[in-house]
Length: 308
Image 1 (tube, rainbow, N blue to C red):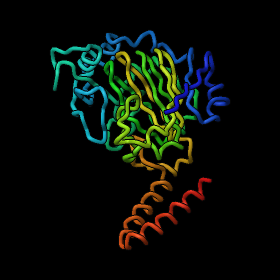
Image 2: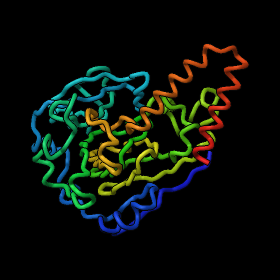
Image 3: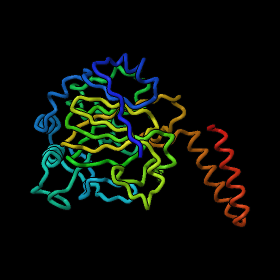
Image 4: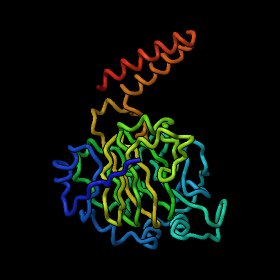
């Protein structure tokens, strides 16, 4: 498998991001960008003091590699202060599954079924410490997701349909990304890859995965990773991690599902095309094997014509 490093940009402004980096449509690490006082303030103690015992939904697992497809975790609720204390330690006196279990929090909207996550609404005491509003017009803003992760935790490989910035406020993190053109090697289940361990993949089970190219980087506290839409990625926290993901709409607003509070549903035209494809495949099953093979290859040829 080939590997390449994500390009690092130092001492750039948000203006440089918008005018020079963003148009390239490739990931970029931004260092020494002014994102406010969060990098110095957001210690575990400060976070617990600002948010207190506000209840938060979390993932709990005994595995470092969260698997959304097979659900190797539990959903639980903890007071925020207790989550911070547990996530910042490596061995727990209070736990759900095991004294060395791992925690992950992705903030939710006020009503998770219909409201997007926005740190300004759910965590106003922290929002004042972080700056990111200059990167896009407010009307394009979709969500700002506050994240907490235990040391060692790896979030499943997936893609997002919107551009986003991962602001790594505290803790070191490894990121592995894959170009959208490599999606056919990624063994996708919806928007998620079934290949959990991208560093040591099971090539007997996932032989095509070796054809994909990895783009890697390490984020330090205060770094920002620009992740263009459709780039697959996973993140591993090398230390207790605190981050904020900012997502924004870069397509026309009517392309997106208005009833999607997580921003992970495919754009309307893509979703419609995939639905038609599933119907076409189901229809082809009515034919004998040789006919099904023949017409499937004709369909593949037509699809290849659209991307050549």
